[in-house]
Image (cartoon, rainbow, N blue to C red; front, side, top):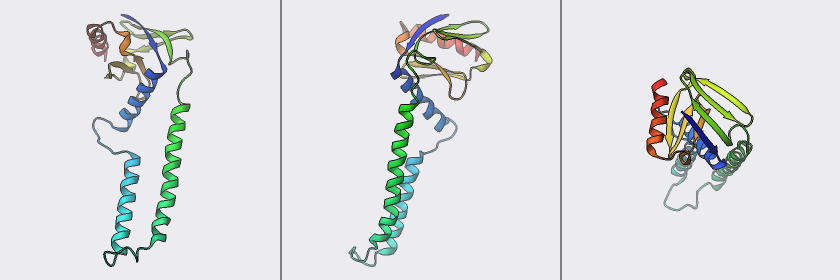
Length: 173
């Protein structure tokens, strides 16, 4: 089976978001994000400090200096963290008409998958395929934990064609 696809920048961004979530939340383990943990620990710390600082209902004896000592570094760290995440996302987008983004042909053969674009070709034996996953209609054929062949939803004429491709890959995986 030969499939011609055109991968756009948005297709890649959708894939990268899915791949990161797939890495961070394995199917066999539920874990919460780093940011959630930081917020939870900040709230717990502030609550703990408030409980031991309050002698009555009024906040007149609350030690605001201690609260600022905790809040200022946390706020700076949070802003820097969010800034760096956004910067990393922008810098990690591949070049237009490069290896990831652009037109390519994916050929499913009896011995593996051959991916061809205007820069060259790459062959993956069936042993290299880890999984095939679907997200928002797009198909991702993972050849490693993070690297996948992206087949956008708009590349398929019908659901039957998509199901046929999935069946071929699953037969070998």
